[in-house]
Length: 263
Ligand SMILES: CN(C)C(=N)NCCC[C@H](N)C(=O)O
Image 1 (tube, rainbow, N blue to C red):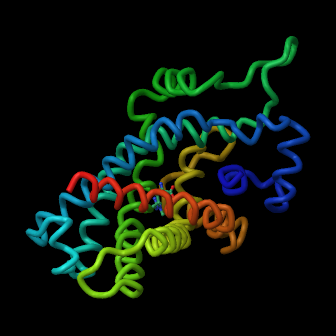
Image 2: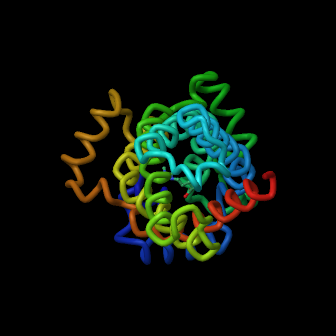
């Protein structure tokens, strides 16, 4: 839904987008382009959390266990988060591009007699982009994605650390409830700050297809704001924030659990 709201001007809001998707594409329309992002979550999160933990280890020279007694500074947490965000953006770029292209296909499933959709599935989508736009085509919008993820993942980890420390006595590990709430709010905070660049990223990824071609990111920002007003930068904010809470609550709980069980 969020990808369509950000890149297409045919919807009046979330409810209108849901109703039109259901009428035109049935329930299947809500699950388009989902298999690839699900497959990519494990890879992308391992890169993000692995780089974050190791950067923090280098910056503070303390292991995860020692960090409860000697908490890292927020500057170190922010730098480690930005480093993780920067590197994960490059792993995420091709998966995210395929998701955006598939989710923007509004044709119902292929039916006899009707023209087939441009992409028949994630593998066909990746192969078509590779053939038509070359290997660099798979990284379309990667710059906007990097600019979106580098600072916002710094904010993500700093918010998580701050919320955990506010509700945990010094030297103790945060409880599971604290981890869930802090992780959920860290997700929302990061998505609120990331949404303006998320809109630009999605539009750059669709450029030349349903979207007009842009000269670059700045051109995309200026022409989107001129044509649709500043509100365009907040499209998809409600959906992004609503999904961010449960997703990131569970992500941080799994991360803390794995770190404890590996000692
Ligand atoms: C671009 N932003 C804000 C983030 N990547 N934030 C971190 C959350 C990551 C999580 N997989 C999610 O999709 O919510």
